[in-house]
Amino acid sequence: SAVISQKPSRDICQRGTSLTIQCQVDSQVTMMFWYRQQPGQSLTLIATANQGSEATYESGFVIDKFPISRPNLTFSTLTVSNMSPEDSSIYLCSVGGPKVFSYNEQFFGPGTRLTVL
Amino acid sequence: GDSVTQMEGPVTLSEEAFLTINCTYTATGYPSLFWYVQYPGEGLQLLLKATKADDKGSNKGFEATYRKETTSFHLEKGSVQVSDSAVYFCALDTGRRALTFGSGTRLQVQP
Image (cartoon, rainbow over all chains, first blue to last red; front, side):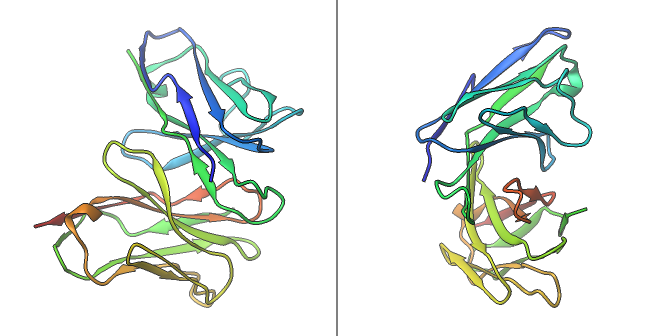
């Protein structure tokens, strides 16, 4: 299995500011994913972050709003830019298992609970 | 596109009751299917999985069978405990490695 940590675990931010969320994995993985879980809702994929290439964003999410970095095989950041109260959510990163080119389960970080005032 | 539909909650049961949470899916190809659980105040954990038709995933007394003919992956447990109270998510992976989640079903088990 993979152990994933996220920082910060929670934050309260003012409208118009930006927050960068860090995701650290204890093993090297090719694919990392960022999800959003709005209050009382399910998880929605924001983007897929592969090391050495640009992140791939899902419909409804854009790079200017959610820039992602993936500098190496164990680390990624997601920035929530120019925040509004609608961005209040739990943001989770996940990774595919060690056998990334065959079926395997995903492991999730503990999440970052963001509240925008 | 791919989608997962779960029964709406909350589901409220007495301890030792039988549990079924329905999950159906729409996907191209042959997805892998998962149940994830989110206990209060905790992160998302994989509960069980199935990768092909007729596979049965099982863990902690929970079971789910991959039914291709009905595109379903219903979660069952014969006797629930108070500690099973959580939100349960059905999900699929069509090979992209990213998951498509259902809306989640909150289970409340009363002593």
